[in-house]
Image (cartoon, rainbow, N blue to C red; front, side, top):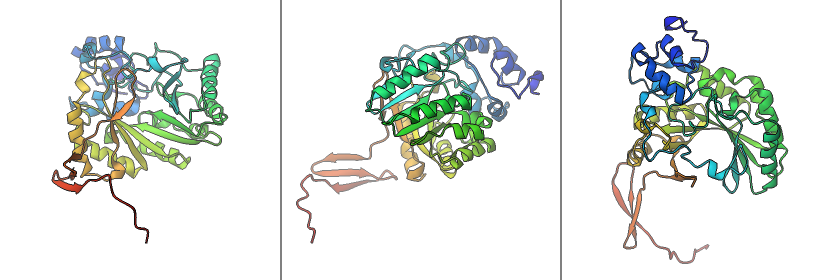
Length: 362
């Protein structure tokens, strides 16, 4: 039992739960309740157990504990910051790029991150898991568009579904001939690792398809022994893993913290894939760095960790225009020469020409 008699074996979902667990003070109860009435709250036992209650700046708490600043929406913030709705031909599908689609299998999550870009859509009041006619419609759409080679199963968090439901989605996608890749995006292996059971691992397999898993982690402390074991079970199941991280002020917005996370991930055989610039979701300004700050962090990481540990720093252009890399630039050109900046910040000249002449093959 936690402080005040809270059952720490259960997910915390209300301001009163957080108070009883010692995660907020009594004088913050009303503010937390007001935030929770606006945006969903859920903190799993694993994440609640990681929070240092003596540290007011704890990076785990910052990700999951409601903050009154969430009630303040800036003019530039958007209910749908990455433009899902503009690219949704049928409910549950987002078709932004020619060769791949998102399949939103559920709008529920095991935890609700305070910076979530879909915070207006996820939670107990959001749409329910795809099933029946709605799932049939998404599969029909994918089958009808043979340019689609990859399906990213997302949500919400699709790994909170029962293995039976996951297996149904895997089987049905596996029957679509023009698909090559199925990718599952999830926080579950980190925040609710006990859900990564042998039955779930088996359910993820799709006949004849390459199945990838993308896990979301923002701080090395999230990689508990239980999370590491869950990741190992997925790897033992034959799945390649990549990771996604959001650049968050007060959580990981420095090179040292991210280097520790990325090194830990590659040691677990998880390739850091994307470092996301935080989106313009409502009430999240206190998390966002500037792009210049993010570029400076990436520049510091370049000489600090191996290329295997470096993700691509990306921005999802508001309005549904897709992801673009926004990392630092090391090359400039002038007068027929390129100037290259090395990892120490020293500039070097490099000959630049588009007329290399014929290749002498001997």
